[in-house]
Length: 278
Length: 341
Image 1 (cartoon, rainbow over the protein chains, first blue to last red):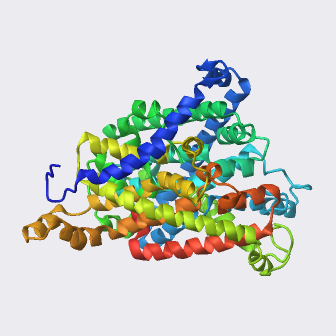
Image 2: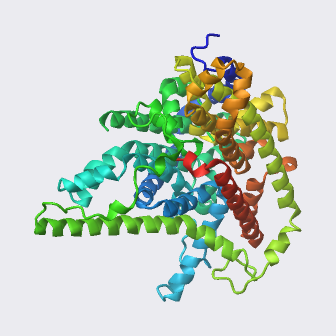
């Protein structure tokens, strides 16, 4: 194998992992695709037809995608100011903020979801506070609502949004904003015309991560959402493990996968255009 | 988490996955690698200390409109700046409360003396932490999770570090393609991969076991090792290696004495995140475990589905404390937070 420079290592070093993933990652997905084509009548697209012709299935897909979009938006609206605060702060505050962002990322998802059950439950802190202030007589139902799921998922996925934003804002530096101010732009205008466009690659990276994580966050969806709301991951699980309908479960997985990839591709394409512009 | 669906992977293109993986993935390493790969003009190699360098804080507060701006304009600017700061600061504060609040609430509730998750707790005690000592099901699951996470991390290190070395300095199309393959498990829904892996192992006649769990976890966790190792290799100054070679050192010696010490923090950070991701994995474990190989997150989830148990709050307290300790240690050893942005 040719080694162009002294710093190069033998490219063959990458082969074991490539082989490992070919057998344990690509092959299983091919099997999944193959199984999704099995119908009682033979090989065909019947399972896909069943999904696409079923209003309930389409509604599950739609609500999963909507959930992803809502969580991503919530994370962006709250995460961007947090990243901005990080960029504005001195080194000590930065370290602290970084710790506060990283800790949830590394804490078990079940623990973080459980925290929301404690917060939103009938005897939870929100209901205690509302009753204490005399705003409500009986505890409100906060758990098992879509708003509850969005709030919990936004918290669980927020670090995935904030970290790329911190990286993006860190690269801009304050000089440009100051220059904009010097040239007469107000704070809002400088933000809109200078900071935001330059941070867009980070915004897109963060949205991509938050979205893909939110739609597949099975535990948070099912624990905070309860049995009333069904999202794609639970739908796959229900068909595969509870009902044993593997071909249909495979087809649902494939449709889910394609839907997620479509969003990833769209955001990546957008990111490429934005990067050319910034 | 996520798998490559055979049509879509080539269709979306290797570089889709590559970019998503690198430009995006914060869990995996400096965005430097990504931004650089994407042709961002700034910082192909972002020096480790870059964060602190350009923006010293003090001049931040300097009046913006100073200089020749007329008084009314200055007033307008001042009001704008104030409203901007209020809105951004308020939202950032809300984000911080949202990020930290629930965890604090769980910690406080875990010390309750009562029987329910009521907040505020009626009194404080350590009874639920004591109850953990008798929770044999949770202990069994925790032990399994630790073993699988350890094995998956070891396997990921061997495969991932070698792979990162193989593609680090290459600009070839095949290296880009491989990078896309290595990152793909991060982007695609892990639950679909879990189901697919179960099918594969069933076809192969392998019953679910710690082995199948380890293999499945390695697939979804190895990207963290690859990404972090790549990032530190890309920051390595090639002239150091040329110097070592010109002084007569063999490639193996150069690797051991020059390369490895310089990239070790990156490898360690990757291994740490890989371990945490495996320990916390649910979508893959869901399909690849059985009662004999119970995993902690799943045991906790099932306990929570059944009854809202305060023991889980105490266990959460233990996990939070362990995470904080591990994170502070890794921050000290590897500068973890710098690697994640």
